[in-house]
Length: 266
Image 1 (tube, one colour):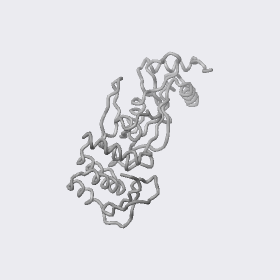
Image 2 (cartoon, rainbow, N blue to C red):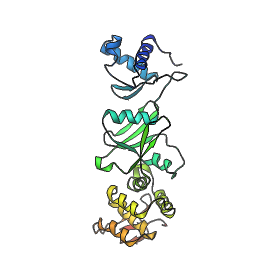
Image 3 (spheres, rainbow, N blue to C red):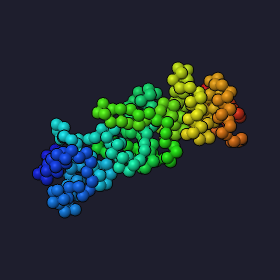
Image 4 (cartoon, one colour):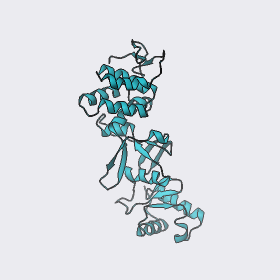
């Protein structure tokens, strides 16, 4: 059974809420509450363990403006992301399963946030918000759209076309091939994305395997020769072959123009 707020915990929350502090750092309660360092550390530990505040990282905590009925509190996704990245002056964008669900490629709501960013890597939680942090170079961030939440905060997502490119580029992380090929075909057919847009984003954010697989796909979809030439010009001649579907054995018809083995019906 969850223990209720003790006198010191209640005093700390009352002080922070009176000051309308959304964030508090280690040292922020020692002076006002006349605590020694170890006492303050234990206070933060109890507050976080009781889910009255949420740890963003060691030494930084999010504070609710008021506790909900029942006492347990967790920040929303937008607030957790803002606190984490504003603290380190970082950039981020939601990607992978979160973007797949946002754009209707998948129906299932992911249990975690998958986050390209330029500061952190690994898995962590901020309250009930579970994060998979994927650190990338600054140049690999971009092609985004910003979404405003009901509480007035913002969340940054990879754009629709960037999401399609990343579904091919980062397929092993997101388990997104061969499904992503169907998403691309459907979006091209419905004119939700344009071939030129897909090529532009692939050239900036894709790798050799991405360009070869997309080139083979776009050629079969009847995309203009001009767009195919843009992809071809970024590729060096090679005798190496990659499978169209990297999750299946590399057996099938050869497409030497793109260096792809059609190991699944296209």
